[in-house]
Image 1 (cartoon, one colour):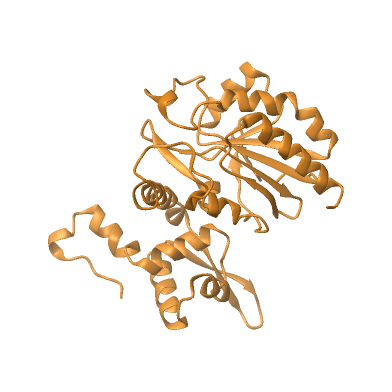
Image 2 (tube, rainbow, N blue to C red):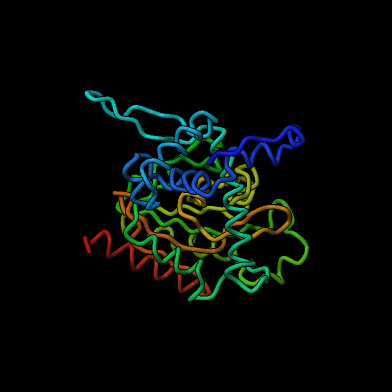
Length: 294
């Protein structure tokens, strides 16, 4: 049941937010729409929720302007549910909750930019294989214009990394966070192998939560030939439930490499990445297999 805000908490923004999305099902509905599940039956199938409760929660989120009902067919008219700008503003909240649970409930409480191979994070990433990347756009580093992460190529390699140290300095203690260092090396290795990826019919795109202007400076200094995408609003991370960690008061994506085919289907999901040169070589081998129709 959706709660109303008592008068004593009328000026409390936390209480007001909890009244909108403090319910279990409401939060999971935001999660699922971010993942690309927009229709009633798809949402019910993903969540195992009763039709009555789903109808009530969807109506509440539409009334609260977190979701919008958008017609997708006529005769009869049927609707799907899309995140509004207000709803997309909740994605950092979801990722902060995910980071907290991965660290304190599913992990041992230590701060890490990576994870064990048998961790919940690794299982989530492994489960992406065979899934379809939702349609979304992220700003590219060259001019900040929104781009589809999936290029018009036989395959797209999306390598996610925490942050480079230029132009902004990295947070204090960065080198002490397991898995955090190596982002410049990773970019250089993909840069040096870029012609091989292109010859195999693939495009390469790097993804971090740094701003496009920060990525632009780094790309110019390093001669990066491919596009760097800014997931500063965490749209891709939320859509794929990518592992993240908080450092320097910002959420950073943990290092992962995805290969996505032209139909947006994830063909490889490599996490954790403990051998960066090996991950680049493995991605190239997967790209070649995808291009060959395997």
